[in-house]
Image (cartoon, rainbow, N blue to C red; front, side, top):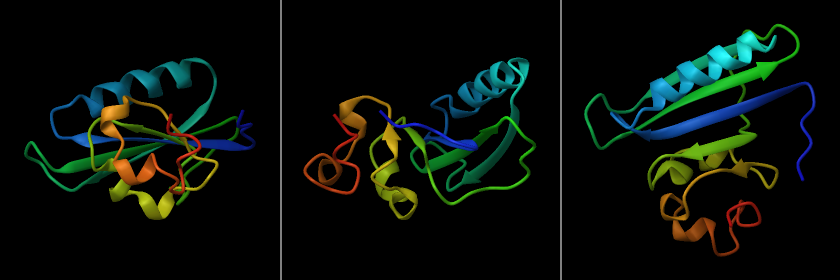
Length: 117
């Protein structure tokens, strides 16, 4: 079980039109209402369906005002997201999502294979 300290970086990734902005809005609203400080940062690769877009939600009990490179929790909405953010993943990254959205190389002994089950 991963234990988070200080702050948590949650990244949602998928194609335009898959609801990433909607999930971000709901999650940030709930976290703010729960008393946490939230910083959100969006990355747009594609404004049309098919490309990968990501949004980072950084959550903390203290004020946060910047992006961090690490990803603590990754939620891939489509295949290709893990490859797109691979330089930000570590063995501590928790990947939450459907198995079909995780590329094969990340299931078979890669950096995040212990978390991708």
